[in-house]
Image 1 (spheres, rainbow, N blue to C red):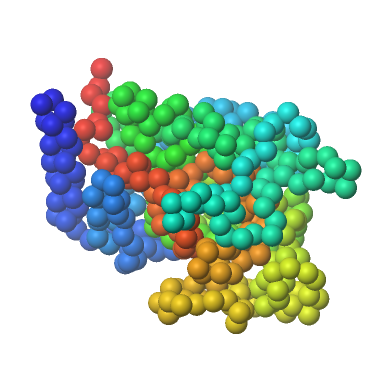
Image 2 (image 1 turned 180 degrees about the vertical axis):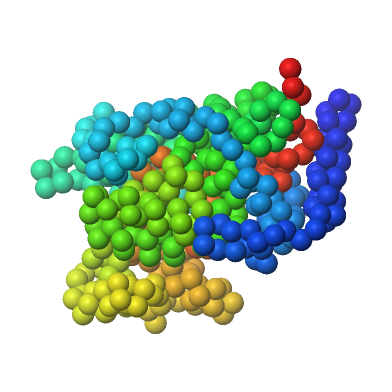
Length: 398
């Protein structure tokens, strides 16, 4: 009976919050970086909880999230246990997660990507030729990871079903108000809920776990485009990381810590995937060397600032999906399997683990749809972002 009463109160509080949103006057211009989303057509929904906000309600949610204040970011950063100044941006609060690269054989290798298709567990369902994620084998046969040891150890646990795969990041406002709040990593969703905290995303807390960054993720569905343009300011040199960070902050409104993670990711991808990306966006094949395609890609990306990769051989059986993918620059090489184009796959396997570890929040682990549809991805709907400002989440002052 007590559980039913609590459930009823939670639903009632949510309904009251939604009705209050309707009663509020139209918001003044709301800017996320350089983008005014006051009239943006954005919708937040969570099929697990049943939350379904219209555009006006979603904009109000974004505004409320963006005005909050995280009080323990330094503690969250320290808990990541990333160290050293190699490749560190000038005046950055966070170390570079990719340097120094860890070399060793004491860690289990991450398992291949898997998906259940027709009741069968299939390895590498997208059919990638290069399947190693987060590491490479050098010419001497040594295992070299694309990141510091904490990154490599965490990613192996995530892919292999270790304890880190069960962790969640949760939020709790300071007593008596709903502006200042703390983040904390819990060993499981059940532990966070039992402690009275609100889950904000899957896995541990990190540089992008703040509610300000969540507001940006909801309000700006496509962060890839501004990140790409800002990456140009780095010219592949770590000495220019500060320029990339400043550009990301100004264009998107991400928090300083989160912008640092995005800057590190953009620079690392530029340093390790430039040739592949030039060839991809120059219309070349995903494998082998195509000098002409790379020249076309250099002109298209660096001069015209266009990110389009729509080779005619991409299969397409769904015209509507094809149109969406074309508008997004054809991020998939194969729509039927969800295989990313070669540039995005290079970023995913080489830079992805370091970014996911340090930033912590991603769209998918926050239960948010991505601009890049992937056939076999799962979204973490345990995080219900409509609940932060409900009456049930208000702590009483001592």
